Amino acid sequence: MKLTAARVRALLAGALCCALPYAALPAAILPPELLQTGARGVVEDHYPVRQVVFAGGVNSLADVVYSQPGGFRPLTLDLYLPPAGKAGARPDRPLVVFIHGGGWASGHARHSGAFQNWPGILAAIAARGYVVASLNHRLSSEAKFPAAIQDVKVAIRWLRSRSAEYGIDKAHVLVWGGSSGGELAALAATSCNEPALAPPANAPAESDCVQAALLWYPIVDLAGLPGPQGAAPSSQGRYLGCEVPDCPPETVRLASPGLQVTARTPPMLIIHGSDDTTAPVQQSINLDAALKKAGVRSELIVLPGIGHQFVGKSLEATHEASVLAITRSIEFIESVFPVP
Image 1: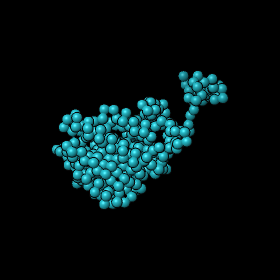
Image 2: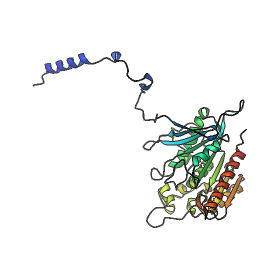
Image 3: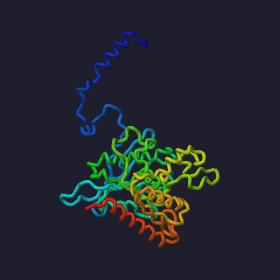
Image 4: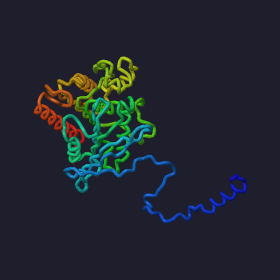
């Protein structure tokens, strides 16, 4: 059939006669609260937060999205909220932020060392009166330095921005990590207000400075690590995007918290095994010396005969080292941030 001008006018008239005006939409078959729309496409994750109750009245919120960097997966953290305090007590609690290890290339927010139930450990600390957050960050296969430390800083800012919602005392934040997570924790402690490591401009307008740091077998000087073995890049090479000898010296310095200690660095507890071949104990010895030289409160505990992740030569040695480490760590947290 020839599509004449008259025929086109007729077709359009027929379409218009049958179009349904918005004002005459049929009754919604879904609840009104589900039919809300925004002014643009929505990409934020609105899946309901999973809640778990731990012993001691600790309420945990799992997989809370704290950041959605462009082109990457949503970044999440687990929150462990302490039980309500006594009547008349301050509602806000000190914040403990844990960062997992894994050579910057692997790991997640629910493991640390040889502990079989790390979420239970974090919940037990929350039960003592602290808000505890354990976060995931971008790994070295996803984004190179300084992406991971920027994620940590965004998480700290995000948590501070939700202080009223989660009962956080914004003035008392401790950062804690092991191995590569120890590097990120130490870096968060030593790089307060460092422009080169600042998070993106759209991060919450809060401080990412911290008031204390707890480090387990940390890496604090990337130039002090063994280089690549064979053709495969080293862990620090994947993290930086270049092997240390080939990197710009300023990049290596910025990624090495042991080289950035000042008198403004917050107090630290460092625990390390004497036989660690992954993160040499000399790294912690040097950091402790630098902190004390700067007049910063520092305590170094070296565990004899213990390797990386507090693993010893027997199950008993691993257990004893791990128990000692977590005990001294809790004592440190409570000494810097006492709670009623």
